[in-house]
Every structure is written in structure tokens, then in C-alpha cells.
Length: 341
Image 1 (tube, rainbow, N blue to C red):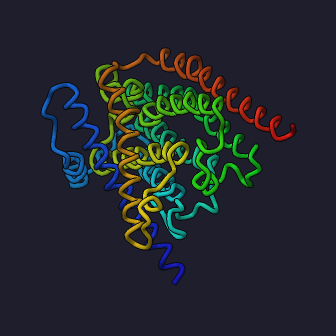
Image 2 (cartoon, one colour; image 1 turned 120 degrees about the horizontal axis):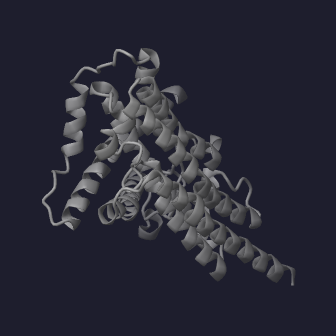
């Protein structure tokens, strides 16, 4: 029975990741179009695009490495969906407590590793395609990944350290983060630090998703699609689905770190109704995060050069993250000194 429940949970979360990710991509297109005074495509356009791609055959270039070329999209999709198993999608009993499906076995470090796998799979697929455009795009993807991972790690480590100061066991645990919102732990100085870390995470999100202004690995006007230039049919559909699931994962990570509250305790609800309300509330939070960190950024900014991406993340965002970490450490020191006195 437990095995059947686990399998059902895996299937449901996978379907949720696909549907929610494509829905968010549709919302993103509509928001971008409205901000540019255009009509934009219908909300169902991403679903239509995926359906058309799945109906087409995948073409493997003559000079590609077929096994690696075909395996890369599968690995990217599987790893992106796996991240969702460790994120609190709504609430499970007890009422109002946001719990992931397998949160007791996972933590933020594991989530960080899983988030890098789709990018690594795209790099491997780009090199395996045998195209010079894809090879340049794969190189850019590696440089971009190295650039944004450090600010992301700073934000995660700072929050976990602050929870550890409070004496909480396993501060990197997803369950600990979901049950102890960082805003209820820090003082005034720590709030400023958390705001800085939130800004850092908001800028890391478009880089994780290869969205404008950090879409240098694809760069249609320069590289004709970059590392995905040789992909088509079902393989391209899997890469698109992995990016859709990763969009949900990145926005869900921001919700977990900074906005883990649920709505059902406020409304005094319980049972299945509470889980449904909290799931809808989770989606609303994800949409808000996506709008500010993806849609708004890509509308108001143009594509960065690859050296600009590195300077932004290793320079400005790393500095902002370190300042935010310092403020959180200072906040914890002030609290510890106050308790000692």
C-alpha cells in the first residue's frame, strides 16, 4: 500500500510540475505582452507547442553522439521534476504545516545539486550535438552556471545559519524552513539582510532558467538557439518541459525560503479543503515570484553579454549577498548578546 501511495504521489507531482510549469509559461507570455501593449498568445499556447513537438520525430545530427544526445533531455526533465518532490506544495497534516512529499530525506544542499543537473544535461547535449553553435552555447551555459551558483549558495547558507542560531535542529532541512519562516526569526537588522538576499535570489532565477537578460547560452540572434539548435521533436519537448518544471522549482524555492506561510490556518480550514486552498495559494505565490523575477526583468532589459553576466553575479550580486549574510550574522550576534545579558 505504501508503495502504491508513493507511486501515485510521484505521478501526481510530475503531472503537477508539467501542467503548472506550462501554465506559468503562458502567464509569463501574457504578462510580457500586456506590459508591451500587445495582445500576446493565448494562455494555452505552451500546451499547444508541447503537443506539436511531441507529435514530431527527433532528428539526430549525423556528427552527433546519439546516446548522449538523446539521453540529455531525459536527464534534464527527470532532475527538474525531482526537485518538486522536496518542495512544500501546499499543506499536509497537521493542518497548515507545509510539508513536501519526501522532505524528511532532503535539504537545501540536495536541492541546489538537483537544480544544476538540467543545466549540466543541456551542456552535455550541446557538446554531443556536434554543432559549433551548440558548443559555444554549452560553454556559455557552463560559465553562467559557475557565476550564479555562488550568490545562490550565499543566500541559502545565510538563512540556514540564522535558523541554526535559534537552536533549530537540521537548519538546512526543508521541513525546518517550512515550519520556521525566516521573517519570524530575525530582528530589524536581519530583515534588511533578508531583503538583500531576496533580491539576490530574484536575480539568480532568470539565470537558472536561461531567461532574458541571461539567455546567452541560447541567444537566437547570435547562436541561432545555441545549445538547443540541433534539437527537435520529442527531445526538444523534453527540454522545454524540464524548463517548465524548473520554473516551478525555482519559484517554489523562493516561496520556501521567504514566503512559506499557508492560508488554511488563517481561514480555520482543515482536511481536503485546506490542502486545496493551500495549493492554490502556493500557485498564487509562485505566479507573483515569477512575475517579478522573470517576466518583469525580461521585458525591461536586453540580453547581457557573457562577460556582463559573470561581472553581475560574481561582482554585484555576490557583494549584495555577502552584505545580506553579514547583516544576518550581526542580527544573530545581537540576539545572542541580548540573551546572554
